[in-house]
Image 1 (cartoon, rainbow, N blue to C red):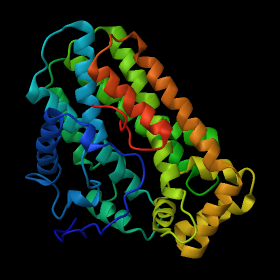
Image 2: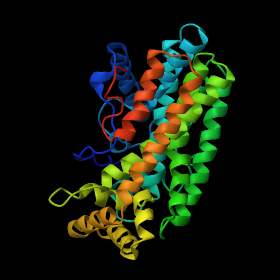
Image 3: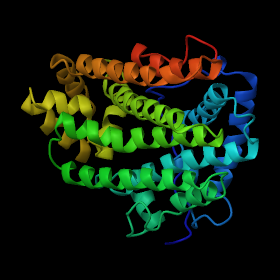
Image 4: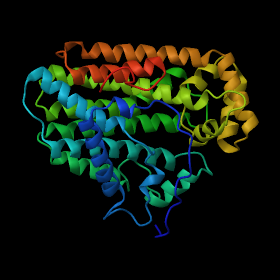
Length: 351
């Protein structure tokens, strides 16, 4: 592994679900700003592999949803159990660990992406030939170190459970990378990737507050359903591009090689969809990208995908029913509800 700096990320059109910074309270905004500095320091500071620029894999912009889920889950569980205050330093450590887990998955996925992608080359230079989630991935090890010093040993167990589930999902992703994945396979991948990370973030937050088992399980279910909804909503937003718009997000998604739910739905109805998707993954062409978007729309894939987002959003909101009413619980509900509306998560209420 050489010491040459990796390429800096270029400007990218922001698509997909996002949180509304104006809906966050001042204390949460301040917390997330401080967390951003800690995240960049841990991801790319002392001890990082030579030449690693974390900005290549850390999507720009605030706020980050996974750290926010840690904080809101901790506060919602405290409100439910009256367990007392949560340690600020411990909350920050676990919140950073949740985001590092997300970045580790992005790094791993990039290393396994289709040949020719810039992020794939950068990822492979970073982790060499060891493309397992633990092999050569110091981000995962740093996340484990952070939670190991948490207030309860169950935090590390939760992280290891998430890593095991993510690893199983990677195996499935590899098997379907060069063929048409079924909708059921893509949903399983969404659950084992984004669902597993979101579930860990919410469970970890609940453990920080000393919540009981029922609250921990409920917040874990909320996180899993919200993670799947987030995964699918992002997929739709990247691919639902109209004629006259820049199709770069479609090309980027195809180059990543990550199976798409809406593509899997449409491919079962239009054989040309799968062929176009694979072609774009190897040789992106704007006209073909827009043709793919039109075929997805004509097959009803976007409408069916949004219906599934709404289903997952509703299940997430129902999981919160056992918690006592509180502002943090309402904020979690707003994040899930915002995904079903297709706008900013949480844009209808103060977080």
